[in-house]
Length: 190
Image 1 (cartoon, rainbow, N blue to C red):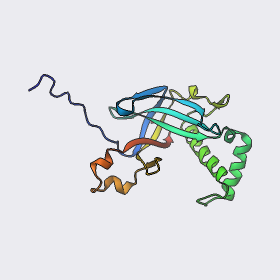
Image 2 (cartoon, helix red, strand yellow):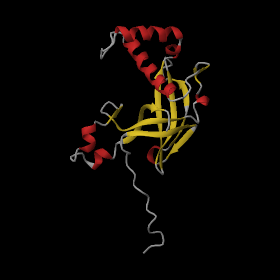
Image 3 (cartoon, helix red, strand yellow):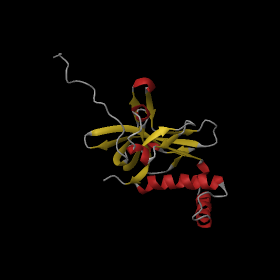
Image 4 (cartoon, rainbow, N blue to C red):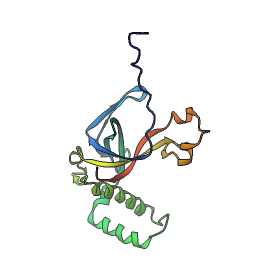
């Protein structure tokens, strides 16, 4: 028996899909091949036409914790009273339609639903200059929707279909590329 037997690193895979209590933190660090420091921030997008809100979140399951990020891309004018009123009218007009004829309006509608989730959970969504005041978000708790995700062929992140999660033919190699991600806010923390 070796001196350090029993100190093997626990192999941890994706958590089960579900809602987990979590707290927005200023930053967290990842290790390994893609080591980085992730920060809670709101900054202009690469092309400057929109903004990217990134919330660093530590979620809890019993004694286990996991750090991950939640993203919202938005155009600042979506937060104006005029645009919100306009989207409310269009919600009635396009009710039940999968795809709106006005793609920009539908994008703003989806953004507002994400901001509504944050607000409903008690996380303040307030402008501070040209972006959102992330300082007021740090330290806030909520129940976060966590699910298993992967990169699709286009390099975009998607939720792994439920049937694939339980498919016995899914290879370990495929599963090794899966990770947990936050897909939304379920409500206030419990």
